[in-house]
Image 1 (cartoon, rainbow, N blue to C red):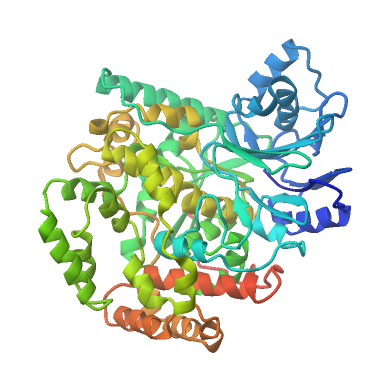
Image 2: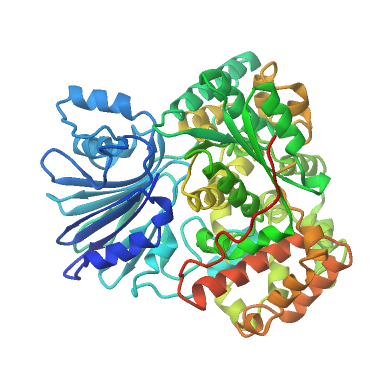
Length: 634
């Protein structure tokens, strides 16, 4: 695993190696083992390396035979040995044993289509010296990140936003559209960052840049829900088991120790069970728990660890864990409304003491319809609300004050179809945002934040469930879950691999009929059937718990003054973004017993992000290793 950075000049704008060094220094945590640079005329490439495969000769940048193609790469190409053998048969000569070199020769053979044979997680930059062109690519599901910006006749790119901020070219100016999307979805848009002018290369896309022309962004892959209705349940069960085993086996290739995150849910447990079958020694597993029973899954994780004889390690987190919040915000790069970044950070820290690679169960809910919100939507579709009644409900909702009990319920059922589903997954609906944001910010936003989700619904498959899953695969999965796991694992210089997100497995999952994904009130039906006889029934059949954090208790207890002092501080009010009366109302509602901890965490995340990246330079915070939570080793 690595971090990459680079600069491409469209014209005569110069590139200095010192710029590349600063960019790479900002992401040294992604690759503490090595660094490398390539500078030639209109291009400069840089990287930081975390050595996982080919520890001896895997130094980057990597070139082809005659030095006309150069590559920097972040990630893993799991089928690189098969690709290498094919390329050698075609006459290509290799000088390293690393998967990075395969990319250079794939480019020689296929040009911009080089990405198509790759099976893995990756971002890369390829410099073609003969054509003076730059090719950037990102993996299909968005496991690895890539930011870019155009400024001063140059294209700048890097694995993390903070790397771009090392250059004076990037203005630290908040983007109103991204802010609106963040308040709605808890993350920024798929193609855009929180800063004006800085973009994300979307999953499954490549970017091509050449002198004297604008960069061209193209999609090279997309998941398509096309149910194979002629197949039996037994076929899907057997095929799923086969692909899961293959995907886990591919991700066990490593020249350094590896282990697994284990929550005790069906996804991570299935990965651990498969690993235990494929490796000769006990799997190292890592889990996080809380003192609050409602949020604590450790007893489930322990049951799985015992069943498969793993070497199990645990952490118990308490409110004091927020002493590392500055470090978490710095590593996240952008504000994120998902508080599970806290336990993800800490379980990554625990794992880093034992291994350099971890496998996780991320992606199972998106592939196999595992979220409870899908059940709610299925129930909503069982009854019809006539248009006149919906109009009356919409009027009633607008007359009810923000925060009034029942207001969101009334507004929700005034909607229909895709609009109703999008409302169900919105944290702050549009009317709430109009109350919480200051007038000047409202004018800049214009409330066009959800266009990509409507487009996703149009692009999705034939049934509503496919549409809901497609939105999650394009939004929640890469922009929340994978962002969180990448940044928090990289904060501790370990590599996270997601077997359930192998694109062959994803493409197969999209052929499973809806009746096998969501069956009556059972989510993830076919996946559970595939795990019968492998995992304990108690793990398969237990209610979904999620990776929650007991913020509601913490915010009413030891952290109450912290939340109020931060969100109503003079510094926060002087930004002129939020209406302090609305914030006060949220705090009062939460203190009164109605949960608003998710909304409050989102606002905390944003305020701390502003203090880290807008108010001051993005220097690494000093509080990185303050927290030492209680540890229990099973």
